[in-house]
Image 1 (cartoon, rainbow, N blue to C red):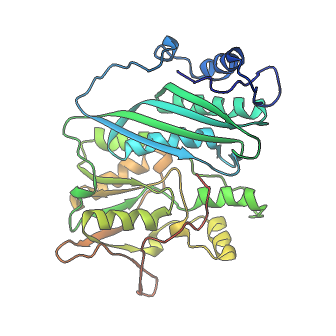
Image 2: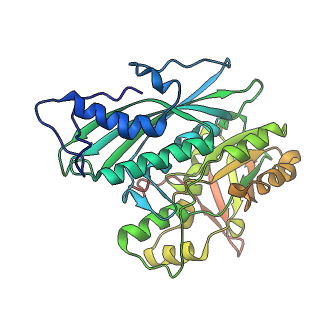
Length: 348
């Protein structure tokens, strides 16, 4: 792991501090005692400027993302866990087997070392759960008041098996849309801590890896047409993007979309729509009608997707305008389109 010593961070202190005038030894202490100790693996042990990894498949999936969540720690997760699972899940959405991650840390001067260690350990545990390794990375330190504790950037690489082809272009009229579980919990869990909102119940983020259900769908031989995780913008935005990219119209039955009572109550109080609230452990699965029942069974057999339900279908392609509609309990249709901004900023 190459963590560039652009600023020195004395580990002997209780907080991250800028050591003006250099001093690479102190940065090395941070790298060895905090990062390398947590992420130890043979590739990282080379301590070189780049990680050299074996390529075992003809096709690679690659992704990158940045994380600026506020607060850093929230019910059910933290920024470290979020970064690992978020990147791994993005790889899974391409039908890939996640393998390697990078990690870039932007640390604010004054960040408690205990908080950094907690985040790094959480990342290490998340990597172990997903079967991936952080093989290279970087650290930078910024002045107090300019970094909000920690910002994280991660990139991921995974292998795509032969004959696996998952993406919006494969969505066809008649395809069935499955949802892996209830929606809106991550956004509301983060918001409840940030605003001191009393929900009357313990609500945790759904932050979780989607590796087990995706791997099971592929191992079972199901012809999965498309996968999409429901992060910023939630279920509604994910479906709207897919409809536009695939050139199809989609209709869902809103009554079938599961929403936790605390999420529904908080949404009504704050004037939010649960279908647009971010999730970090949920996805939609688009399959042909003949595979829908079997795919639903595979999803429900895995804890992270045990609440999977069938919520709708692709209505047409010829003459489609990339529209998504939600049918209400009284039979009325309302459009679900991309919003111009986020309902809840800085939740991932």
